[in-house]
Image 1 (cartoon, rainbow, N blue to C red):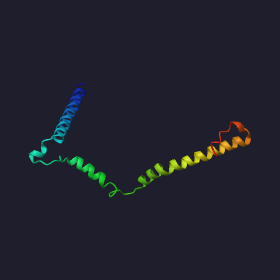
Image 2: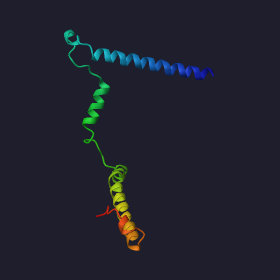
Image 3: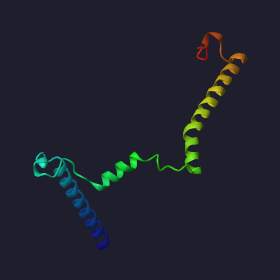
Image 4: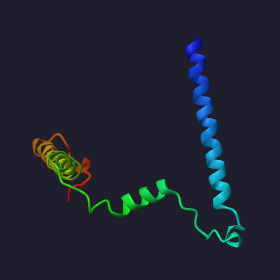
Length: 113
């Protein structure tokens, strides 16, 4: 049981350090008197800069792979073809019911006009 409480203590300590770092960052970013101390108006954070650079050059470094191609097909072609197949079969089923007399003429909604 002692190992479990030590683990919880480590997690709490990391959370406290993370909260202190966030608080200091917010304090520096929102300080209205920074421009007077000749520090400039921008707080440079290397992690934020790497993230923004990654987002700006995402497509410059993209290399198509079979996996990315399959994901593209799955996200684009499969829904379109599936919806087309569903529309075709529902139309055929409705027409078959109309032709065999399962749907009376007065009860038809004419939704496939």
